[in-house]
Image 1: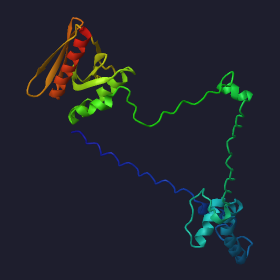
Image 2: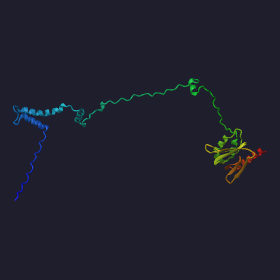
Image 3: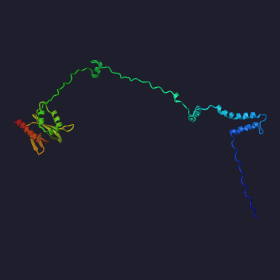
Image 4: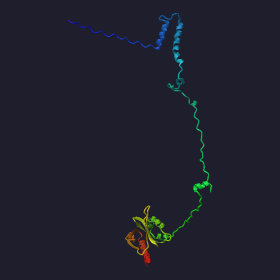
Length: 276
């Protein structure tokens, strides 16, 4: 019969580590070393009390020897007076002690230098104008009056108000193309080359001008025995067809139909007189 071995013994309890010595414990150990376990040797009790009373002062002496930071000192003083203390590294300052910077000095504006005026006949004036000063008379002033050497003003009132208003631009261009000694006998407003135009019968030619933008179309047909004019009309407008230079030139859209008939009659009379 086998024997059962006994159970293993429980592990031994580990003692707790000793507490770390503190400053007060070290001081107490020093006092104990000096006084001994049975009290001071050869010292009165008064001296022991004096030494015990001076121990805190001696312990506080290292902190007194190091100078505190200015900011911490300022904060402690402020807390004593009721103001909140400042964190370490901050210094309390008073605004009254900080002097405001002086304003910048005012600078007076500097006036630009004025160039001297040029004297008549001076060398500098000759350099600006040219190598040689030139004196020219002013342009002649034209009088503000109606100048109508071509007799246009006597013919325009025969047109209707709508025709004058519609053909005003073309009429302005046409009057600029007339010769100084050219007399206008009849005017009609219509369409030439797909643009609003004006036709004039003068003592020298038939002049057709439209108001095409930038490049107006101009056709001048001299009075000659071979010139032929044909007229067409409906209940609204009339057309004049000129046969010249082996071409048929159409001037259509004439609102003043009576003026178109008069234009054709006057042109035939001119051609008949030239043919005689």
